[in-house]
Amino acid sequence: MTVALPPAFTDPPLTPDQLAAIVRRAFGPEATLAEAVPVGGGTVNEAWWLGLGDRHGPDAILRVAPSVQAAASGPSWLTSDGLRREGAAIALLPPLAPILPRTIRFDGSREIVSRDWIVQTIVPGRPWSEVDPGLDDAARIALWRQLGAVCRAIHAVRGPAFGPAHDPRFPTWADLLRDDARGLLVDADAGRFGLDREPFARLLAAVEANRGVLNRVTTPALIHSDLGPRHCFVAPDMDGAWRIIGLIDLEFARFADPMSESTIVGFDLTPPDPRFRDAFSAGYGPVDAPPGRERRAALYAAIALGWIATDLARLGSPEDVAGVLTQMTGRLDALG
Image (cartoon, rainbow, N blue to C red; front, top):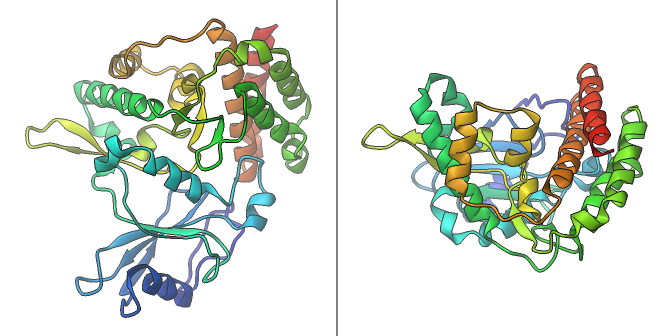
């Protein structure tokens, strides 16, 4: 079995023997793997569709996290613990259980392979991002409204502190944002990928200068951190109306300011059709943000652009980084 992985993956792909051993651990010693097909599209976890046949269990999805070594060689936001974060987040979201994948087996022992792995049920439907070009505006508006409601349900979960869903360890929101910014600069993200350090140094300074306005956010709320049409699965119902019936990839879930959710920050970075943004807002419901929201939003946009820049560098697209850093500098200029 030969598998071609994207350049972002530095770990070798699983071997047939490892795949067979994972199936036996997940489904029992008599389980036999009939077929394994790599699932493309992701750049963080290695993913496989597992076909077992009727005798041994349902078809399932296997996802394998980066190794500790691979995560350490990447940007500061890359982690070998992402599947643990996802498991913690899913456990906190029983109201969304019908659209979330169910865990068949999680294994963090790193015995079969030196990485965390999880076998999950297959989420039904098709990725919204794939079917979107064929949808009319009414269907899109309806889906954006549903996404707002899904987002609000995630944000309704409160945590004891700020930080990753499985390990919220930062006492204040400013502490977590400082860790984000420090990772982009001090933990070698800029230096590792040969990027201009000045925007990252300015970002860290801006976070430090705005600790007061950041710490007006005092309630840690669960966020998905990568929420959008790419990770929502949709299908038409009996009446032909399109519904969100699946939600995947919560490996970056954390307790944060809900207004730092990727979808909301993305509205600022790449403004959509106003009708879609209004539909999302209607589904999400009223927002009661503490004073200073505009300054916080500028910081969130700058940090997101820093993540995008380092991800582009990680994926081997340095030609696109300069434009992203220019946008990042513009956000920091706006802060004064």
